Length: 514
Image (cartoon, rainbow, N blue to C red; front, side, top):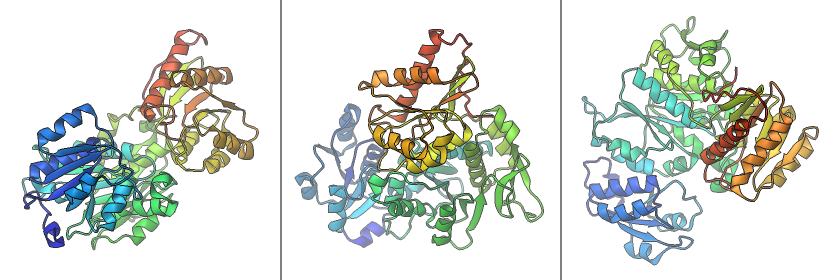
């Protein structure tokens, strides 16, 4: 396959017939890639270590071939297939044997995002243009900001959808016969690493993009903090209109300064302080826009107030920051301040994101199981100082010491769970020796949260918060962060149901501190 042939594949209407494509992985992303490519007429071989029964049944139905087995070496079937292109699911790390084999052989290596961009014109708007893309990444807050942005765009009268790492593959959205005006694409660092490999004539070029923040995460996948940062920075590549960055996180500004963007793209900042011209921020409890108006040197537009956000459980500082970022992205496509205000009135956080699962006997129980890294947990601890902190799990190669040094000393107590407990306990010993630390050594998943809740109930008093903000992944003891959060909430409600504290339970789910 010549590079000229691959370079010609920039449209759904290009000639994809006969293209040999190996798809690595058969999760929702891998299946969407295989389904798209077979519909285009490509010859597709899917390789995966194991396949869910439904996907295994559907792969031959759509006209692709399926190979299952160990992928720690390159299968003979892949070599014999001699692919023109390999499309890898995001879980395949740069040093995976199949990824290294592909690159060493000079074979084109795409992620699902590049493939989706190439075929984005399957369904066009009335003016003939495909949907605008808005790209969102960051160590934390991606999903909330993606949902917020899509909600604001819909309130502004646009057909918009949250897609990508949030759960719905972009490839499914670009093939939706209803079509969209805008796609709000959440991107993981894994997807962005693949995006950085693009070499075609028409690379992904979003209308607007943001990196919300940067802190060490997924170092075992990327190999180093620098590699992780470099992957995140690709979110700004070729941006056409707006590069939004976090003024409170200098790394995001440097990404914008270093990015190769389309001439005329604006750099717009946001944070919780008073905004300068061309920024979004907060003035006397009012969220304001000084970026998307003509007289931005002397005027500002009100978006909403912290008081209004407090009423609907959205006043935690990191959530307010996400709202400002989403508002900037929505404003870049013409959504009005009033439409943003109205959109926020009906918005609720997803489960397991600073979700208040119960209030009983004066103790508030908060599930932030989505805080799977130290940066996210730090935001939760800042929102709930003095909490009884449930921490630990699978640290993913990240050192938790800095978080404990910065926030751990404010905790009333720490309850440590997970397989990496030794590192967490040691960090408290070094940096917060005055904080009582309790270890939960429960070999069975079913018993972990019951023990956690019993300990927390002994420690917490009227007015206290018990906060599940693990700063770690969940896969050592649970099937997902959602499973971890559900088990925590169930254990809390089980204990309250026994009437131990004698208080009146309130199983609110609106979340967020005052």
